[in-house]
Length: 335
Ligand code: DP6
Image (cartoon, rainbow, N blue to C red):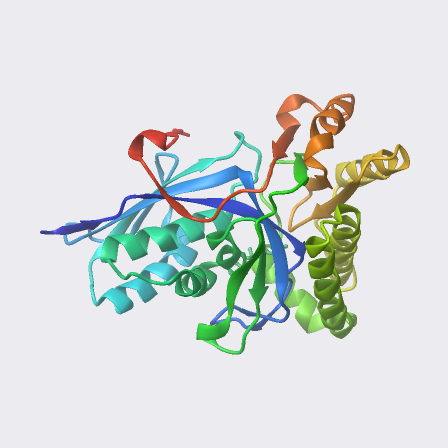
């Protein structure tokens, strides 16, 4: 047979509560610190892969559109390792569908590369353990190693390729939710890879960041165990502000904030004053994510509607780890 095909694999995006912001090994994607995230049900990627002798090059199709060769870099990092593990030489066709609101600018490389990792494992019959899948996903994009698992997940930085992987720490089946506020859908000017490199190399606060991460991680795990969302939110918000301070203090300085991001942060502070549990976090872009109680998500959503349109708001609950889906569950969205 000329083709080795996988089933469809689905992985969900994750948002970090303790941020990963810096590598100690750029080739292996080993991070400077442990990070901790929540996998969410609102954004996911469905992916299948076919290795075939009939292909003349690797191909990546997203939402029915063939991508330019330069968009394949992270995908090929995973394909190349998988080809070596499976002792095959065939090129691969990767087909992916992103279930994200149109033009939300939230298509996540984490869900995409985690789904791809599970798909190559299936296509080549590698039978990797979850831990090994997490290591392989990491080689595409650091944060992808966390999307192998559902709920709260910790990425343990490790010291080499085989011991830097994520582990599940809590299923998060308690009163926790997240609202995404989409203020901007453009492409970011500085990729996370470049941004974190500049922070590590030039921010005078980088060492302080690393030691504060260790304390934050310890505290947030305690708060998760106690199901104390208020404390979880406080630590997460502070971690995000510290990460963004590295960027403000880098040389040359840069940031991912827009005036609209600051408006959302002010809304979150108002929600807190009104007695709701609400904390914000931000990543390498201007959109803001609000950590809140699942039981208060609808009411907070309704309040946000006075400032934002429904297509700027997405509600999410904790989501599961990577899994196989039937073809008829795949949402075929053609761009
Ligand atoms: C701000 O995983 O996208 O979202 O490893 O270079 O591909 P690479 O970076 P990536 O960085 C994510 C950074 C972040 C924080 C986080 O998710 O922990």
